[in-house]
Image 1: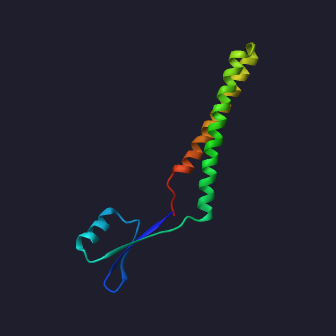
Image 2 (image 1 turned 60 degrees about the vertical axis):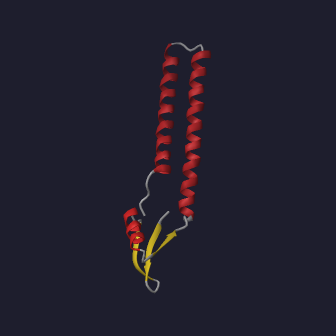
Image 3 (image 1 turned 30 degrees about the vertical axis):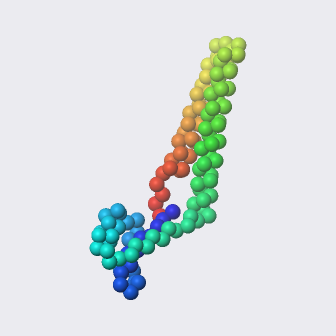
Length: 118
């Protein structure tokens, strides 16, 4: 989502339009007391909302999968009567499953909270 800050002076023409203005730009306009500050916030597009929704769903899905895999591994260890090679294969597959869940969860969190360039 983007926004535009316009500083209006005189007959209502925009003398200065600032994309993503700093607080100092707004303070200088307020200190001079000769301008009107107009903030125009752009509405998010359908693509931005879809990306946000898919990120939130992805975070929830992979957090749930991580919790489920952890409980599955714990129950296999506690209640399972595995021996030798079976136990070793189960441990490797469980570690790989958790590793992939964490990687996917991390990418979804980056997609959700990362800065987007417009």
